[in-house]
Image (cartoon, rainbow, N blue to C red; front, side):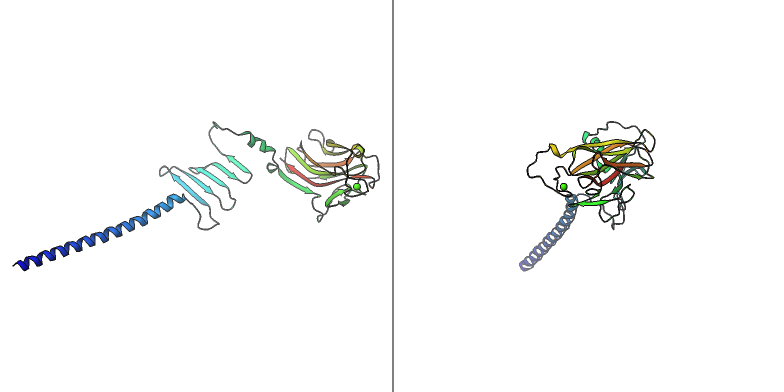
Length: 287
Ligand SMILES: [Ca+2]
């Protein structure tokens, strides 16, 4: 009888130990599974939220729902790179390269624009480039009343040494798109022996008829008043160049279909081997 009781106790203990081991194994497995889930969640949270298309040809779209019918979507367009915010299919903000549109159907309130943003209106990026002229020696220079070109060291220019002295050269740019202002960027080159004469640029007027031109840039240059040590003769005749290049950057009101642009000098000499002027890197912007 005693042996039977001992055997019963041993069986009972063994079964309990087996149950405890099974429970421990299940708890360990559950714990591992939970750790896996937590690790995945933690990865998502620690990495932020990434919305990306299945390929680079699709738009990225993040939509926030407030109900079945109300939502706000944030969209990055694949073709243009533009960023859009829509509220229930109505665009309220669009940002793309060179364009910033706030589209609202109600009044604007509490809009604060910093001064530096306003000043950026003068940035060339907000001007539309209409044409470049005399910028590349591999492209033909055409349309000027004299299309002569030359090189002054590395500078390719209209006119220059042995080409332009007294007088002016003119070009008419036709069929200009609609605009209200013109910005002329160009480089004017003084070469050889200037003695107080003036270089100038003229353009047809915003206010008068199509053919009348007005001076919009003038610059005096006098090599006789300059006392420079070790001056440099850059090009042309043996006279040194003291201020070879002047940067022109002029904005004028203008709404004509044609732009009549002239560059010239008040040089008295007609010998472009004594003193001359040239023009390069002409860029016309519209706004
Ligand atoms: Ca020279």
